[in-house]
Image 1 (tube, rainbow, N blue to C red):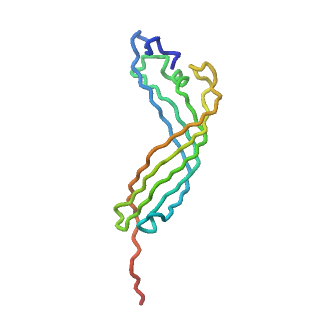
Image 2: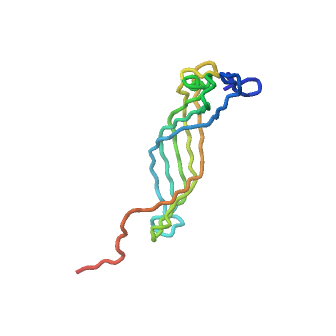
Image 3: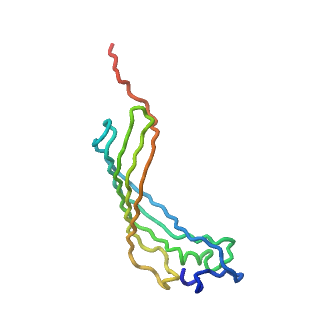
Length: 163
């Protein structure tokens, strides 16, 4: 946003005062995944080391929340010149532990998740670069993923009766 900041790093609004705005990131991914549970260090056959991988689509951008819309240089269509909208193909991996208890209450998985995005700018013109951004980008995301599951299924009987 170097094109709209003054020498002190502030945006001046249409009234000549400091503009109130917030800058944050927003995005989404759409992925197709497949995985396998390896019966390693497990209490039962439905638990163990969980490996997953997939491919998908990633899109993200900066959102400029211009409070009261008093700064026209960062509002409406002008905000799109600063939002750095990028999207492209992504790969994702997960490694963790999956546990299913016999009591159907304590069922969880947790582990590390990784995303690699191969993205490009989707805007025709980026204001602070004063040109179209044609560079390819490599985005990395990683995090800790934990989930608790409540299964909805009936348990098979442990005894069979023959008549």
